[in-house]
Length: 404
Image (cartoon, rainbow, N blue to C red; front, top):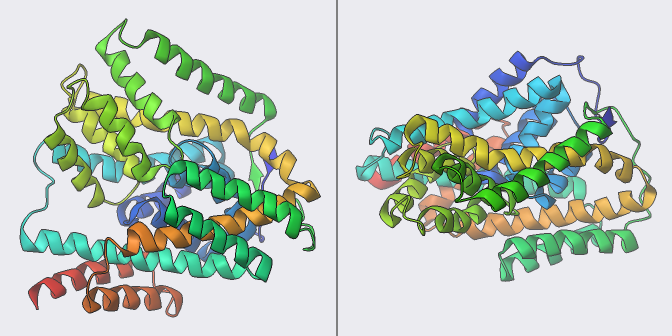
């Protein structure tokens, strides 16, 4: 059993059913991409339900940002794992992933597309909701994780690195520099007590998960193209999920190379699916369900969608499970705690950079856009409105902007 951070008292352990219902609501309402999802998770599990504290949540986010795979989905899986064991992790992943996956499979069949002025304006309103959600996350995390000039400076430098080089390598560089700077400048804070957030992952289970991750990656690379189309399809998804850092949009070039180059999916169909993936809640990695459904391969359709979802998410989950036991043992050391303060501050800077680009630059074009984003931010921060209220308000605001 491992621990991660110290959380306030919570009413005992939860159940997989409880986790499933909460994440189903999030899966239906979490618009805005991986950075916005972190904002939703923070509001739901740190602020409202107090399943873990700000420090433990920041540690999880920092760890998932550093690992390959979809950071927001890994964070969600880890919180479900903490709450209700492996079944809780599975429930969290299933409920958070399926709504958008189903929507994209329907779109693949020609049912789920949005068109016309109303459809476009609804999508734009949801993009403005993402601005408010990310701004709230930056605001809240900065107050807790960058409270002094040293950590505020680390946040600023991390943001500058990402703004001038928005790549997955730059993100890893910002986190590494944050850790090194924290090791030098952030030793004065009192040590963090080790604690009360239980992660039910043994060291032997962690080693097994890391071994499975490596064996699958190497094995699929060796046999790809030699056995069956179905295995090739799974290998393409697994490779994309295993080799991407930062998740979200960063995976798209890998998927395009894996599916457009061999002729499994045409460029037009690929871009149409990518556009649809922006309009649905949940993780962007569910784009894999669309690709699996439309691929000119066997399997495709519903079976191909399932292959896509399992293939692209599995490596990130395996490497997360494999890292958790050893991560906890490391983070209890004073030097590592100092480094983690710097890393957490760097994560704030990464979120701030993402707030500007792509969230702000792709959404806020007019004073009306700014007004809707500002209303959403005030609803979240001052009125503590549920995210669903903000989603509905933003979507309707987008329609109103289009009609006036």
